Amino acid sequence: MLINTVTDDALAWQESALCAQAGPEFFFPAPGSSTREAKQLCNACEGRVACLEYALANDERFGVWGGLSEKERERLRREGRDRG
Image 1 (cartoon, helix red, strand yellow):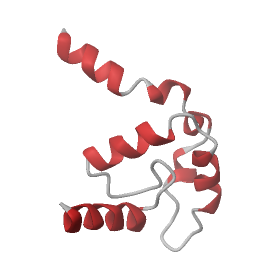
Image 2: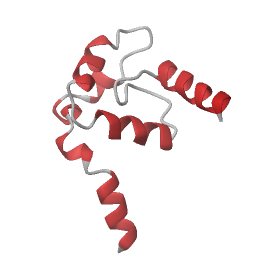
Image 3: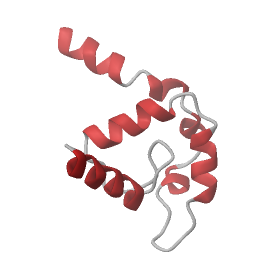
Image 4: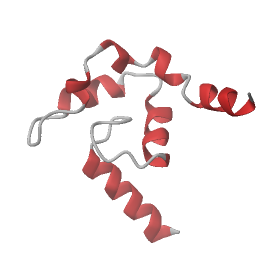
């Protein structure tokens, strides 16, 4: 059961995340659509850092996670590889 506890703890931020109150289309907009409103909601969310860490650790390729778009997360990954 330890695995479930670790998983539950790692995902606890999702329970209070502001995105839980919005539909998925808000955070997964059509290509070319604005992500500004989703990012604003993320920036007001207490779980933003945990969300971003989750997205980076799980290689989330689509949508807005932790206030960053796909391209912004990819840039962050590249910069991390360049430094390390």
